[in-house]
Length: 297
Image (tube, rainbow, N blue to C red; front, side, top):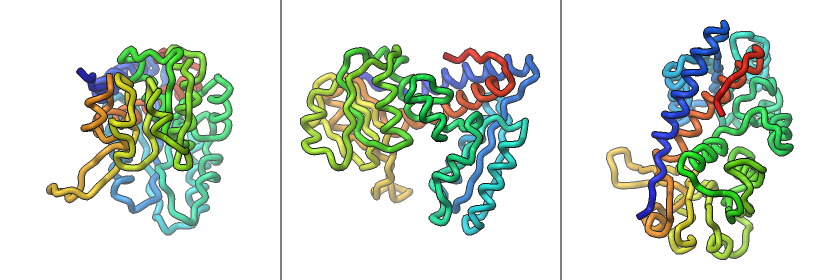
């Protein structure tokens, strides 16, 4: 029987732990604050930001939101980030991606104060992650780690395959899996669009993390019997539904669930964890900036 990995339940546990730490920080005179910046007319981005604001409210984190017209000069966004960097009541800054074409994403990521970079994308934080001394782990890979831990998935000595090499998920995920930690010590292969004979790589994998951004790219025929499958993808595909579409992952759930020992659904798997780990990082950032210990691990 394939075990369904319930991201909603694990995320709820993370939010409970975060709420406890928010209350403890309040006793020390610290109120964690997260600023979200939206420079897009994309409805999906607007939805994501509103969900993050609701998450903050649920656990007691103060949320601040700035909207910038998508056609505004890039300098307006840069100046907004500078202002947020200088605010003592803002401990974390999240600039919602993607950005308009005329805005350089790398400049934006480097503009955020590394101590307020709760996404973990600033080069300083990336370097610390690679060195094994992470300040903030990127939310999605860290969320995957929490799922593996919650479901007692053995990673030490396991053969792991990460499908996808993005800076946001693929690269940091692979790095976390190879590090010396309770959810690391795996022998990890990173595959991508140029990988030859992907099926052969997946056939021996005890753990598969699919993050290629391609709908139902991995199916059950590619998987090792009993493998743990973590589906990071969330893709909108046309469907005969009221909305005219449905959400699917990077894994063909129907066929994969017949082979896997454990699998995350889409939605309800990794997605809730990404949002929960943003709250986690914001509280950690507040503790670091105000020199108050935070007990979340």
